[in-house]
Length: 403
Ligand SMILES: [Zn+2]
Image (cartoon, rainbow, N blue to C red):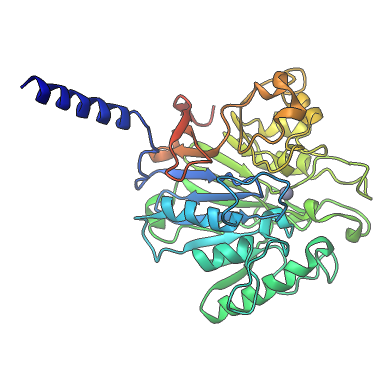
């Protein structure tokens, strides 16, 4: 009898220990989840809208071995992103594919690269957007260049030219299988919209395209205006990034790819402040992804104070994400009066930043913003980026949206 009791006690203790591990509670209709997926090789965000419609923003893989990959090096970043997305898309309405995929701009850390590319069997190489496209699939894909890819010049992105050729082949092949393709146009309202139950959320959900191709929404109707003078070929790919704002009830989220907020000596033009005009039409949001990974030329004071998120996410893949000068600016209450909670996907910048700057961050990992029914409250979860069952390693208090 005594032995049985001890065995039972051991079994109970085991289950208590096992159940101590917390996981993200399952998505349910009415929730909006925004996952910033941590691989350490490039940006990837998955949005699950309140009706279950999915939007993937970027699927990056810079193919650089020096950037530490998570959870490990046994697969490519696109495979890890696909495995993650399939895990959290299980049980959603639809055909299992991502309803909308978009690329903010044509750089490897947002769409994939020729280096470390897998050969594939459909006539194009697999990395980033093409790899996730094969493993998960897209019903519709948007980018800033389709169909002509001629802005600001015929070769829209010299730096990633070889992979762009693979990408064009991918698009052609997938369109033959039924994938829809569209150009992301600045100013448009609901170019990306719910596909499963839009009527139910008609009054409290919208997606506004804020910027693309150096043009920014004017704030009136669906008009957009160019922000530069002179030759657009002087500008780098980053300033042409697509930016959008998602609104659900009182809650607002901003993502603007690698938009720049000012000049940086390595670039030719001194007209690189896209952040300030975008901030003016975007207005105050609850959660923002920092532009350009918190690099030197980004997150200027005007942008921070106008957009003024309660939660700032840095999607990082190098020891310059963020750079110390930008982190110093962002954490200076004289620059940015309303200090947010800082979140980051990987810890590569920790050494360069030093503990005084690093201490502002919550534990690093996959970052999930869960907006509760109606968009009045939200909460941030951080999931372990090195474990394949994605345990929760941090969760914020429940926040009121629109404050
Ligand atoms: Zn980037």
